[in-house]
Image 1 (cartoon, each protein chain N blue to C red):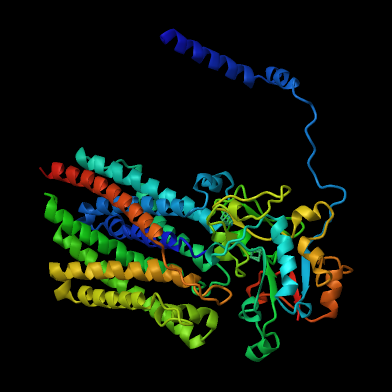
Image 2 (image 1 turned 60 degrees about the horizontal axis):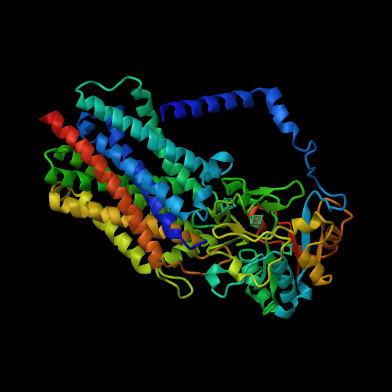
Length: 340
Length: 260
Ligand code: SF4
Ligand code: SF4
Ligand code: SF4
């Protein structure tokens, strides 16, 4: 089971990045926060690229990818993976339709078509659903004590709303530098506040988990966290990584909660990078590998990704960033054209 | 060019129309043999409402008691053998007491009694199987006789059934299993790379009126029968002996009972 866990880990993390896009869509459309009008398209396109990476990670993870259509040929409502397929593809199409049409309307200097409005409203709970369903993949499994916690979906969401917007801030800052389109400092600052709250909540949820697990002292639940943070039965490959992740998240909180450092571009960049990689290690490496080790028989079989798995991962990320670059290029050219 | 293309389109249209009309369809089909081959359970098949196994662990003293059973199962089911642990495919194997009964084992002093003794483990054919819940393609499903069955040809290799099974009863073919099979049993399918497999309570043997291979090889150390039949041998053993099951606290209701 452990083999290829790296694909599942990256898949899970990227579902979060995709869901994180909703943090600009929601204030703009629901709270009429006008300033985000400039960046919603970037959030939507980031979601598209992330979902494409997610689906690719699942495909390369399957033992028999040629048979993937069996999921649709034999729809199985009791399987969470079936629902995950449905919500992920649905989210991809929603964002493609919304992003494309809104951008086209902007280019033509008109208001977007009215039939889009319900779809936009639908896309907001839908974003929450993709990460909730992804958490349900894990948290409903008997015998995997690490995941068997009702706070898993909230934890996934809080780290998603930190890492997604953190990446978006970094992307906005790059776009500011290299193109004539300025997403706006005010927008970036509002996003930074979102990241600051979300990362605090994420750490709070983690501490709740730590309390329950170590105060109850039930081995099936405790041993996973012990394995990740101090090692178990002489195995501790993840220990340095987990502490790095904690340090990065703490650094992120310090830099982003503090207004002085949040408003300084350099420390803002540092804070966002810290949050992004802190969440990646926590969720990508820890959350998935930690759930499998120790196994339900309480044996420790450590998982270290092989070189091939590493290369596949890099390949999928490269594909995703290619899609992202193309989409952002389109969005930015339209914005430049409209401003000109 | 243009005329030939039109001709092809006309032909296509005509044949589609012809096929759509029932009389033509029937006429075409008339050439084929009328009776379809009948598929159904054989007359000699063993049937049950919930198959179950009772393992008398007192009779398993060392690996030598276990080996012939594993050998019997793995050879007739074309289970490959790999030396590398991470490629291992297991339908039936033995483990130590604490691993077999982790979480419910009665404690460290009890385990002294069981020190060095092998505990046979296999798929529990759970009455409430989480693996079936997790499978997105119904490649794993529960039959009317309680057997949790697998379709190796439908399985997409997503391995969520493995994450869902709390007993590690399932194995994934990380590589093509065929080179790892010493001697292929032509009466049982071999698998391909990228699918999951596990013990099936010898469903293919029950269909022919035979007992599971491991039960046959065990010479009375294992019993097999219908759990819903109060007069069955398994029910008698459960009634007369103290039995435990693996991780009953998880509610999967294993159908494999252990006399300790
Ligand atoms: S032992 Fe595991 S594989 Fe077998 S039925 Fe139970 S949950 Fe499924
Ligand atoms: S690996 Fe195969 S049997 Fe297991 S859940 Fe996936 S499709 Fe079903
Ligand atoms: S019941 Fe059949 S398939 Fe299952 S372990 Fe025994 S011999 Fe193997």
